[in-house]
Image (cartoon, rainbow, N blue to C red; front, top):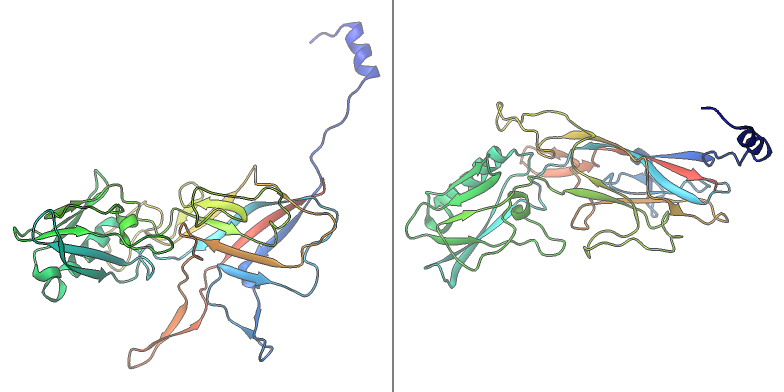
Length: 333
């Protein structure tokens, strides 16, 4: 590009102001570093979950003249079964005709495990027909229609009128959201057709810290009354950034799935434009308090290591071995 004499003179006399990124520092957090001290004995005790940590080293963890904090990375091992003791139940109501009223109800429970849609359909069907069958019917079927990604439960008996009754209000959960059976029906029928089945224990989790966000002048919020406060970030359980660890389980050696959450996986996210959290330059960071909460506002389900004796008694002897790591970026200006 050719410049005129006037343009060259203007550039020499007014070179402008150099622009450069602000100076930053990095603070890394590992859930392995959580320490809980028993006040009675003074000894460290094992915590049962890595998803609720409190780190206080009795010294400053990050000091300096910084005004912003941002979470730039998260790395995580996800070993949470999509069907666990928080969401493994399904309630069915019975009536004598389509208009009701309800004459009986029962709740079935599925064993905790990782399930593909086919595996879950088979497990639900087996439980519906176990011990003489729900409501005395032993002809139940439960199938997953791959093309529509939905479940169909059928009593296969002309005398059977039933409905699915979701029990997932507030912080409670059951199989209904996971299987696409979320909305209660006023009508009883011989079959129930679900809608989109996510097959996920939770579609996202929030990384929450009361201490790190305490200086915010504008508070985080959400359309949900259960989540969305004191956020460092929200992590959605979806591709990309997810690496499935395996695609089969002991339930079915041939079962394969690409649905995130049906098998263990590792997750990595890097945020190019992370949330910038205001911080007071007169304060240091001396405490790290973190919770990872699911879409119901509960701390993520944890699967601790257990021991079983000869009598079959199960005891928890140490916390979940799954861990996560975060990178916080602090900015001077």
